[in-house]
Image (tube, rainbow, N blue to C red; front, side):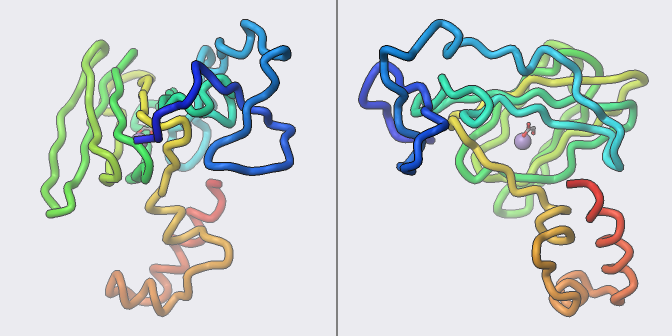
Length: 197
Ligand code: GLV
Ligand code: MN
């Protein structure tokens, strides 16, 4: 979903003080092999949080060689029973492969139709750009998946944190009216979700 590049590569200069649509390129004389390789997805993420899952990012911010190339990857680790909660990526379609374990992968269309399947290691999924989706570990042990995106910075709108852990908070009357519940329910959710980000 990103624009086409105008050169072979444009390794992000993270020290640049100017900002463009992406990052400026670092001088070619400073580009090395190291700029095109990334080891950040090798290790298992820490899943000790209320969701029992963690996303390890491999986007342009972590891997500057991806700048302007319109592609990136994540690793998501799951404790048994863990969930990567409902979220969407405003700038990318996502396709992933389960590497270990058994995941229920689901998404909902703009017409509120739900599609899902339980996947085992080696099986792939696709999440059309912008649609709300989740993965849940429904196996006995740990699980993890690698996901690819057609953006160097897909972005993630995570439903629970967007609604219940923004800064400043969305006013309680907006949330009680939206979900048709009493304020104590909203306060309870806010107190739990607030600690996760
Ligand atoms: C998984 O859905 C991810 O966004 O990494
Ligand atoms: Mn996703």
